[in-house]
Length: 528
Image (tube, rainbow, N blue to C red; front, side, top):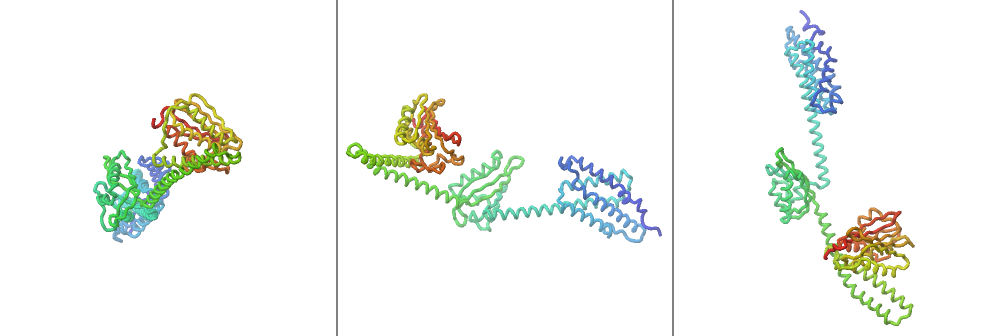
């Protein structure tokens, strides 16, 4: 009896193997020319450039095994085993192993499946061009091999992607648990609301009951409820961008404990612009809110205390001032005693200014600004009077005064003198020893500006932002202020300029010194 099957060299498997180079070249061109692939991917070439040649060999082996099985069946020596033939089954297993391999290597699933479909088309195209006969059985094997590779690749990559997602979700759960962050998900179409364990804990709710929007609203503090509902409605408008960010109080549904929460979220919209979903996070900020409230209470108490203390000290200080005045004019004191009395009077004046600063601080805290009583006056005269008094007190420091233009306008005389005194005293305190203080008053458009300059160390840039805050005493070359010492002088000066409708700016450079510039509207004074 003859051997089974046609000679190997004329079989479809053998003829197809001889066309391997043509198959790979055609396949590579089709992949590069595929308009569905990204430009970067087309430039890099096929994703399966190393895998397809091996897959081709597996395909030829499967075709050869199929041919031998069919020949045996035709000769009557064996029954056809179809896809369950041992050799053919082994070929399929090699195809699956190959697919497992390139899937494990992280091939892009979309690109891999496109390239395998191109391989199928090229195989049929080459068989037709070369006249390679494909019977029903050979065609089934060809399609089965490619399908097996595509199916196994898709399944493996999907499994890997699912594992990566699960790992990412586990990491997110750990991160949110460590940070005390709750996660919520609201279906705006059905009204179903999903809370994780942390959300339930913050809301004072156990794990059993289902949650919906009405239950959520009932947990909001009554005073915050309208504000929260308004924020939710605003986030449902596509023009808002879907952003949802708010802080409010919750009253525990079961434990009735009041908690402050910070809630962040985002709404998602369908093609018609309708909100279909909201997701977000919630954080318990009760400790922070309590600390803020305690700080506000502490500041309010301090300001009230300083105000009361200032008023209490004013009466005995007035008595000291009157007593020194009487001694100086009617006390018949010796020159040595007169110098002592003058030192007492100077100390009393310094204490009086400190008390005035404390009272001004209290007024600005509770009243919003320092009160002023502007009236027509000459700014030149007011500033000259304040500087003459400083010259008498600071005889060792030269203070120059340059007056330009007109000083006419609406000013509060006492407050302007106080502002100039504070700015010049600050310049004296931080000037280089032996250097002069320069004060200039000049018009600037419709305004008037007062410049106070001193040579000395530059103010550090990070201190400039808080320079006009109360209690600030910027150090300068190891020296501290010899003035009132509470760090209120610049704060009061800034408040006086603000009350007049103006402002104070500062420029400080090591090579040019420091200049404070107060700009005051000539006629636009607050309260006029």
